[in-house]
Image (tube, rainbow, N blue to C red):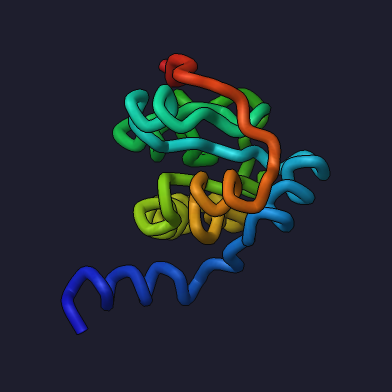
Length: 131
């Protein structure tokens, strides 16, 4: 097993990963879907309606419960589902958020592409990220 495979396995061991249908249910119940994909991917493939765009380089500052720069309403009890293209970098990101105190952080298994393949709502996109 490569080093990155081991790191990914470790990150996922602490996540209750959500498939596309479950992620949609969580979103409807008030969970925050956070899209960490780069602008080029969002522009080319679209976005999930209602997802908050936070590029990966800002993620910890915008979602750590005790960060002075966190998004309004984010607390240690917030449910957050992080998504990337295919569900790899989002697993690492969600594990980082858990280490920062966001205990209900997880990720979208299969990422945006699994969501779109499941026929769930997608809007054409390229929205700006939350600064």
